[in-house]
Image 1 (tube, each protein chain N blue to C red):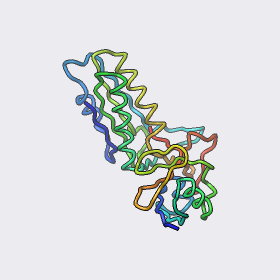
Image 2 (tube, helix red, strand yellow):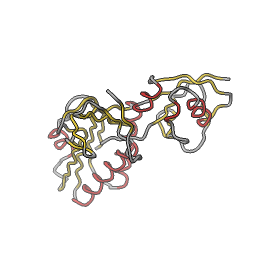
Image 3 (tube, rainbow over the protein chains, first blue to last red):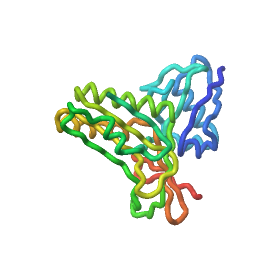
Image 4 (cartoon, one colour):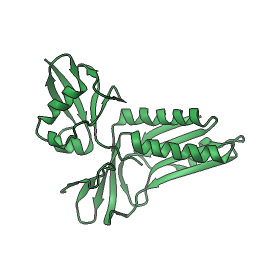
Length: 81
Length: 147
């Protein structure tokens, strides 16, 4: 098992009550594992089945491997402009 | 030239125009996004913009580079403001210059559309009735948060 830090923003941060949460997932971990672990936490019900996930400040596509030390963020629908 | 930034102070719009214009540019476009007073029939008093700062800066820069690749020769300056903005405040400014108007206008449109689709920035509208709401362009109804 490994513990990963996940960054949260805007409506997701409000729902979880934090800008950063820790999740514990089995190794080797993927972004889907992270989202699954988040959904089990209080506030996790706000996450869609496949939220946008960024790793090291780039959007991911599909399920990709993640590890401790990477910057993982779950991104609410963006609304700039 | 390309310059993009996420800023917390008021955007100096004339400075952006000066940045992109040169003797070689015959066309300059300016797009401004501003805070409007009504959204979905509700009276808006202001908007709080937040960002995933590091990624927003990177993504905005990537978009500007893509614009320069797609519209060869464009000169681009973009700033997006974060923090609490009042009515009519400028939230985003996109200045684009090119020798020709078509490339300048098309690049400007490309940048604002991609920005709205990709850059991790969020806005929480504040209403006259005291409520606030995170705007979700993908949903028919945004999530309402009691203040």
